[in-house]
Image 1: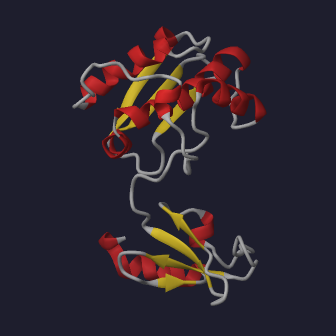
Image 2 (image 1 turned 30 degrees about the vertical axis):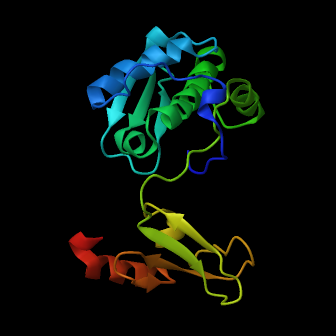
Length: 201
């Protein structure tokens, strides 16, 4: 989950008058309770629920073990703290659709079947960012202005010279380390910056 279209979470599932969860344990208890109230044919008691304190790139994640058919939904505590309960229920609904697909079809994507269910239950397709990006891809064409946030060292970050291009004008781009201002356009330059930054990466 990355971007999110504006969506009124209350339109589909009005949060109850209970106090919003104030701890990870309370969220871990409240999330499956809320999930059981969502109008979706999901066997919620069969889902394992976890809280991640480290997740920075996703608000929620649904994983499926094809051998055991076990489904695990992991919720990002940082996202919950940023969003609050009312908005975070959208993340729960999003992950429930993945669980629904896994339980009924053994696979899940963000394809048309997912999007149809998302429209039906008011689940966002993406979530808005909840942490500051560590890295940016920045077009070198001064007339373009395109940039893209990145939170981890994916191949587009570590190998910007490997055929990747600006998403708007197709020029080359450079990668910028936000905190330090260091930039690079090749893998060799990335390696030197990474070594130079050390623990500050």
